[in-house]
Image 1 (cartoon, one colour):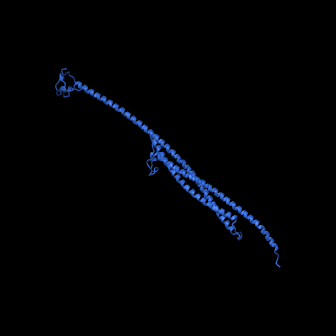
Image 2: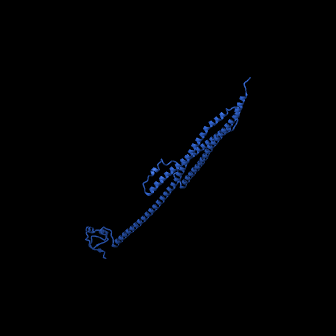
Image 3: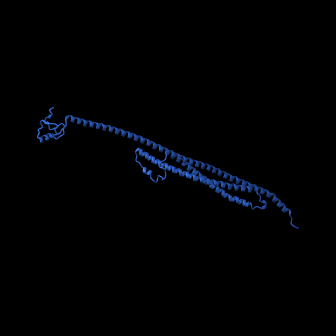
Length: 330
């Protein structure tokens, strides 16, 4: 309480003051505290030292609490970000799987339609081959009918009549030529159908190829989402992606384009099917017509030969009687 302290090598802050006391010639006894000229150090009272220590401790505690709060907030933010990433990943994975399923369904429709087109193409080619063969066979008959008509014109003048045989031969020739004209028109129609079927086949094959590329990209994107090693460079190579194609396309537009293509191909296929049925009926009618006209001609020739044979009998008897009644000249 008198402002003096006992000799001590350390002050309340822990500083060593023995050296400073020795140099100043003080023994440390009855030395006043807080005199800078004697000690060379700033004065510090015990209550100030305690207050400074308390402030330092409080600051440390506050800093620790703030650090703990920030760490908790950081963990919460990280957890929320992880949950968001997981949710986004789940949504993108579901969208990719749904897109893959829809694209595979559209590709299956295109492949099914391509099978119909290929089968119809084969049937049309068979009908075209049969139609060409039948028309060629009818053309081969024409010279024989024309020759038969020319031979009959060499008959005696009194026998040159438009009889049933001549009418049957003319009808057979006219019917055969008419059948050839209709068969040739049917062949031309078949060739047009084949050209349309070929165009449909090319469009469907291109559509299937594009869908396969899209499926490859989506499957590799799905593997990326699931954590597998990507191979995206091979699918996006310039040799596979055509220039000028739109970079962004909606799902509805893709489905509409595919449906339009399928409807166009189905319409052409049904038209070809009708033409094929019509051509088959035409071939059957032509064959029946040729058979019937030939049969009519043969029957007319047989009747004509019978009539001629019957007419030769009386003429032969009259000729013999005439020959017997004529005597030698006197």
